[in-house]
Structures are given as structure tokens and as C-alpha cells.
Image 1 (cartoon, rainbow, N blue to C red):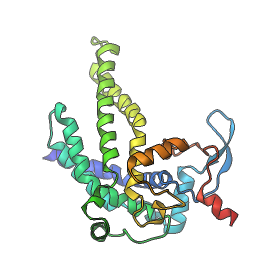
Image 2 (image 1 turned 90 degrees about the horizontal axis):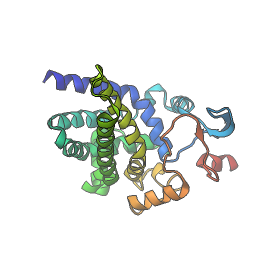
Image 3 (image 1 turned 60 degrees about the vertical axis):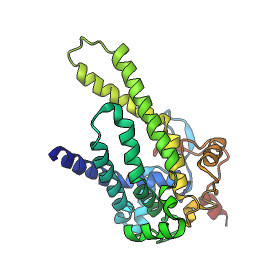
Image 4 (image 1 turned 120 degrees about the vertical axis):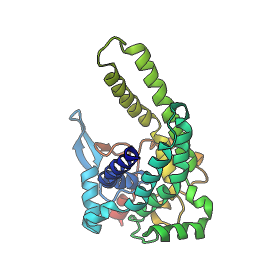
Length: 273
């Protein structure tokens, strides 16, 4: 019981600290670029046209909504995290981890949808999803039960694929790459688990992006409609369009954000008017 409580407290603390980062990431994922590109240099020193990074983006949000505005969507995200920790903690056997993760994702997804929409409404300066209870009522009234599960399928697929990749890579590394005679074997295995988890999350990032876009797509917010976002008929349609544009990794990096070739952002359109 004490371990579960400590996990919830630790998870909640990390959620609060990372909220501004996630806020910026979500707005970038939906294609909102309020600041024009600038000429900068990449990690190799080569001159490139770059989009503003994390700190410039966060400063822009804070200049409009104040520092408190960087924590928009925190309440439903905390609810999602607490519920996910509790549900996942009920399943102890490793062989049932996939079921546990899927169950946690299914139960917490409505809060995830509310979190994303409360963030994305910054784009159009709307106040449609402000309170947790009001947001639940709004989604149910306008979209019914299915509205709470917008973007669920790609999120579930990404979670399952990430888990299988992580465990498979970790097994191969621990079995064939590490020497069982090493005195720090347990530490090495934990490090390999972290590294393989990182690579698995990178490979499955497109599922995260598509899930987030579908969660806000055509929900009545400016950020989920043209010109910021097309109206997708399904998550597969969203995937194909992003792939065609070369935007499958949009939002994956918050630094050294190179402008995609031939891409025009809404901020560019405003500057031309």
C-alpha cells in the first residue's frame, strides 16, 4: 500500500514538472506555429532555417496566459496518471503486462482527450474545455461516449508495439550481448532496459502523434480544423497524410526544429495578410 502511494506521489510530481514541456509538444504536434522561423545553426554548425524551440515557445505562451498558463490541462492529466498507476499496479506478473497497460490506457484515455483539448484551445483562444466536469459534459453532449475515446486505437497499437519491441530488444541484449559473469549484471540489465525503451518509444512515436491529432480533430476547436489541421476521416487517413507530408516525427524533437521543405505554417499566412 505504501509503495503504491509513493508511486502515485512520484508520478504526480513528475507530471507537474513535465506539464509545460507536454503543453508545447502538443501544440507543435497539431501544427500550431505562432512564431516565424529563424536562421540558426544545427548541431553540426551548418546554417539552417529553424522553427523556435521549447523555451521560445513556452515564453510565448507565458507572455499571453502567464506562467500559470503553462500548466493548462494539468488536472485531467493528473487524474489519468493516478488511475493508470493504480490499474497497472494491480497486475504483477510480467506476462500480463500488455493486458495491464492496455487496460490502463483504455480507462485513462477520456482524461487524455480532455487534457489535449484543453491545451489545443490555446490556438483559438477558446474556453470550451476549462473545467474537468464541464469538459466531460461537453464531450458527452456533442459526441457521445465515443468522443471520450477519440484517437484510442493508434494509442493502443503504439503502446502494445512499444512494449513488445522494448521487451524483445532487452531480451536480446541481456541474453546475447551481456556477460552473465559481470558483477554488475543487474545494473547493466536495468540500463539496457532503459535504452531499449528509449529506442522503442522513438520507433512508435508516429502512433502517439496520430493518436493526439485524432483526439482533437474536428472537435469544435480552431486547432483541430483547417487551416491548422485537415479534417481526417480516420486515423489511417491521418497517418497517410502525415507520411505524405514527411511529418511523421513532428513534435518529437523540441530543439533544432528544422522547417520541412515546402511547408507553409499558419503564422506565415498571418504575416502575409
